[in-house]
Image 1 (cartoon, rainbow, N blue to C red):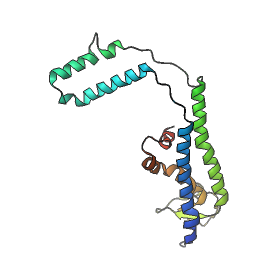
Image 2: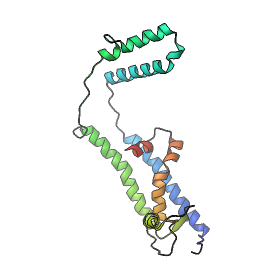
Image 3: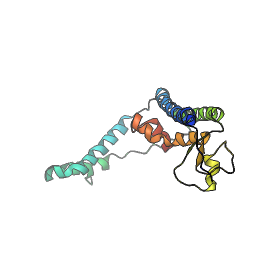
Image 4: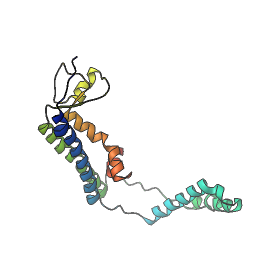
Length: 197
């Protein structure tokens, strides 16, 4: 196949704007989800249990720095067969169904709206504004089975499968910018939480 050369204006008017739009929409989505997020109700027993687990983990990890008698005394406090903290603190696990809790349902709806709605709107706008553009080429050869995925909106039989259309470039950016979001927003951001869902 003959080598295809792209106009440099495609880089400035299609390729980079899609990256910037996708990135800025992700940042806005993160801050919007922080604004509409409801405060989780934390119970005292949950805090006590989590702090006891943290203390036991720290004892397990750093016990080698304590004198032997001090380590054994602390271990006995947590793990004694008859009076250990973990033996005496038996609590029934909460068996609430999240589908019956209206607050949990509202939080799920908020999460879906803040994720899906911008993706549909911006994806439709990018498909409308940048339709028919070939934006970039992946630096490795691909088989013909990748053509429908990477060349959405550009149905050319003779075009190599390594070329990426503007609509496909948008979807690659939506899922590929997650590590950039973690660099900019920090590790525990909404984009990473959405990835785990």
